[in-house]
Every structure is written in structure tokens, then in C-alpha cells.
Image 1 (cartoon, rainbow, N blue to C red):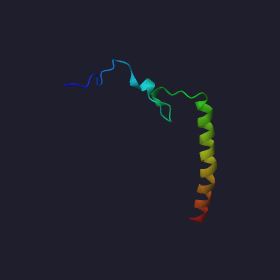
Image 2 (tube, one colour):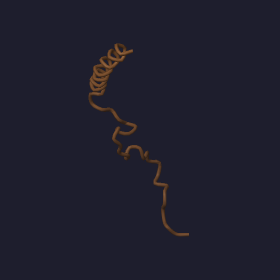
Image 3 (cartoon, one colour):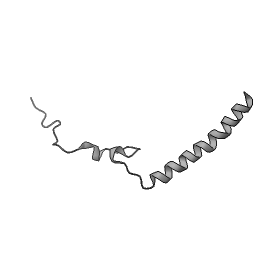
Image 4 (cartoon, rainbow, N blue to C red):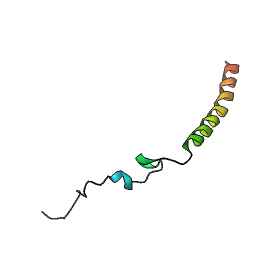
Length: 58
């Protein structure tokens, strides 16, 4: 019964054509180590004063 080809587009890996915010499975951002270090520094910069205030108020 008709309809033509519905699938079977060959053995090509579809993930190379999928776009996502995180970059997909082959994501290698340019300066990921530096960006991660900056993000972690920011987290600590925010969390340490909160933890100190929390300990003070206990």
C-alpha cells in the first residue's frame, strides 16, 4: 500500500544533523576548561557567603 519511502534513509548517523542548545553529542566548545573554571568560581563566590550567613544564624 502506497506512500513511498518512509524511513530507511541509509546508514547515515542522524546525530550529526541534529541541532541542540548544548551542541549535541559531538560538542567541543572552544574554551570549555576556562568557561567551566569561571562558572565554578562564580558558584563558590555566591555559595560561600550564603553558607557563612547560614552558620551565623544557626
